[in-house]
Structure formats: structure tokens, C-alpha cells
Image (cartoon, rainbow, N blue to C red):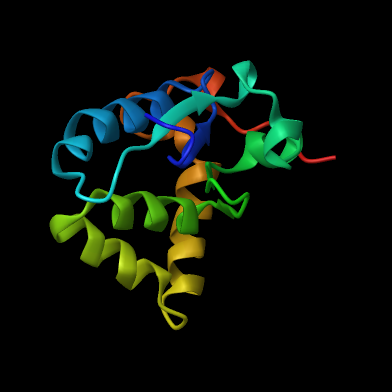
Length: 131
């Protein structure tokens, strides 16, 4: 990892989120053609340094580029996939297409709202209430 690598910020208290990140670290890093990336739980990250709030980090995974651009939710996943190269990059590019973005966002929100019910999820994974 270098300072030129993006950072994936996720909920380290959520078993489902952590499992997804561990899967990505294991399988997506093997095909990296364009550089690395790092994953950090938001609970152990100086979020202000990345220009994001705790509230945002609690509700969606974040992809922060070295230039400071922040992508959240489905678009963070799309950027991770695109960074991974190979077939994953094509899937990421599809998720980033204008007509597909709203559908990807809706699916992401559905999964996020029910992450405690997902494989590996626990009651501690439930999103905090807004407000």
C-alpha cells in the first residue's frame, strides 16, 4: 500500500461488513493490475482527515481516493471492483453507469438495512436509527 492507494472505510463492528471486506481482500487483491487499496474500519479512522462524518461512515461503505474524492455505498463497491481489474472491473463499470446507478443504490440500501440478516450478520450489525 502507498499514499497513492485508495482507502475503503467500513463498519468494523458489523460482522457482515467485515466478512465482505475480508473476502475482497482475499479475492480481489489477487487480480489487482492498477495498484493496491487498503481497508480501515471507521471506528479506528480519523474520518475528518478523509472529509467524511461518522454518521455517513455508519450508514455506508466509503471509497476515498488519494485526491480526496469520496464515493459511498454502491458506488464505493463499484470503485473497488473497477480497481480490482479483470472481470470484476467490468462489473464495477456497469454499476457506475448512469442508468444502473439508481438500481445499484437501491440494492445496496436494501442490503445495508438488512445486514444483520445477511450471511454472517448478527444483531450487532443492525444500522443505528437515523437522527
